[in-house]
View 1 (tube, helix red, strand yellow):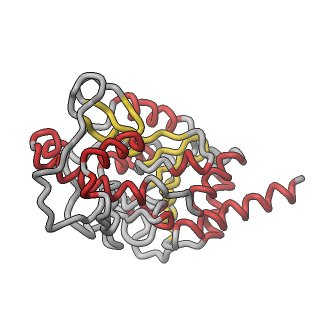
View 2 (tube, rainbow, N blue to C red):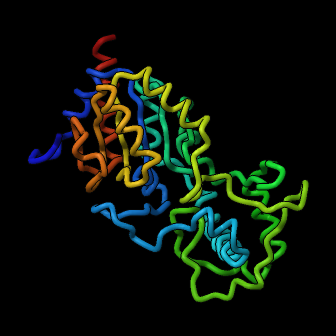
Length: 286
């Protein structure tokens, strides 16, 4: 739909939201880069680094799990201390103003909740929680960090560049001696409570998101290339239902030919300007 057209401005986006007051918002990694959490892909939608660990590799290989949790021990320092950025605060402000009906996030960092968004569905789960794959018990990730450090004190002094999955680019190490704590309830295998690549999104989340989409009159994509089908399918569903879709994203998205409007500007400053513009509308009306 946007073929041959120039990217739109923030003013165009504000007008789009004024015409469609019940927004279904889908967010991606671009919303969290200002919070120090790296994104996965470049402006063309290609991987910036090796693809993340898959569910099959994590569950099927102890060596893969040792490598993941060793990297996570280092990366959690960044992820666990990350704070909401401009995009998160702007979307919370828009929800408070009655503009956002539902926020579906592909991110696992919990920063939308931390900023004050309440009508949120965590499509891919939350990295701040750990689940036992045997008994289903869920515990805080911070609690596991204490156990990981107690079991592996020699790793505590290491540092590495943060990676998008809450882990770190810790390479060239021998992970074979890394000790992974088991579930304290049943001794089972622990996994971050997120949907890994190759793993299915829980059906209940998909059903809830589809129901929310049906109650909205437009969709806004913020900070996502939509290269992962679990998010892209909601744009497809919106288009099939005749709902206009706008996007704020630097670079190409998988849904460019489905968009009614696209703003290729930094997500945080664009959404902050949008929230301010709509707030001005409310003050004038009062």
